[in-house]
Length: 359
Image (spheres, rainbow, N blue to C red):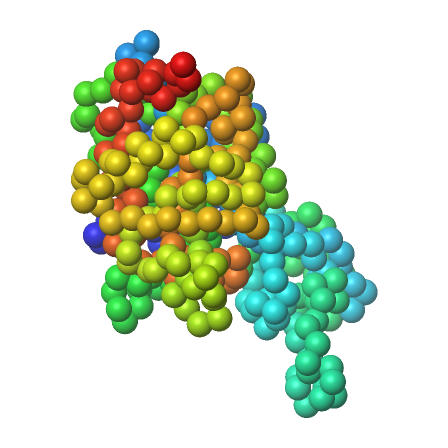
């Protein structure tokens, strides 16, 4: 467990804004290389770790995305404050007074998303949410020239700050970027467990780029690999914290990974979905079901690659995604890996051909 925790620490603490995933990619490459026969990349920077099978075996992609929700410097004001653009879906209420670090060509510069003290606000203004367009980052500078001396310039990525933390309940872990370094960690561990498995399929363990800004890496990597089967590994939404309707989200932390029945980009392949459910039941792997009408995963572009790829999403219930600090349960991680490995072992040539036969 300690080695896995160290891997999760390095993955989540690495910066990886959409389009700026190099550091996170380096960490994933370090951990996955020992279990791969080949490492390659698409032209956008998605990492592909290949575990070779027979030349005639099915090609199976398991993909997590490397990028995290972040920001980008758009303007430096004359008095030394930073204006920014969101990268990925942010809700304004989780942003004010949060620490960030600006990733410059010379290193990191820390700052905070500024807020007005309540002492200076009217009772009416306290009821209103500050719009993102009106927010700014304070790096402790007093002029535009001083900010520029810090090495900050427009286009620099801005990363949330949250050190990886094991909570008092040691199964519960807190970090930034669990969305979706957690998926990348599942991919790494799955290839590790498949390392000495004799099988005719070729498995591609993928870390995609730019998922949070339109699942772009999954589209290009799908065109490059041309898979026969695709499994997207991502985080889901846990429904066991206050304020979330149990009529909408039923997943609980620690109750197993979520098999997605629907999201805004994907209806899972019915045969593959049934195989995943049967595999979980046969192997006694705890699992849950989820629907996400307002979001999508890398399964979206992967399942429409070429003339179509049977695909589905396996997600891990996570609290407080798309904020500075999210929570995960370690058992969900372990059971997600178990299900991915067990499913891949069943996806031999005969099984994949059966899934793709419609007569």
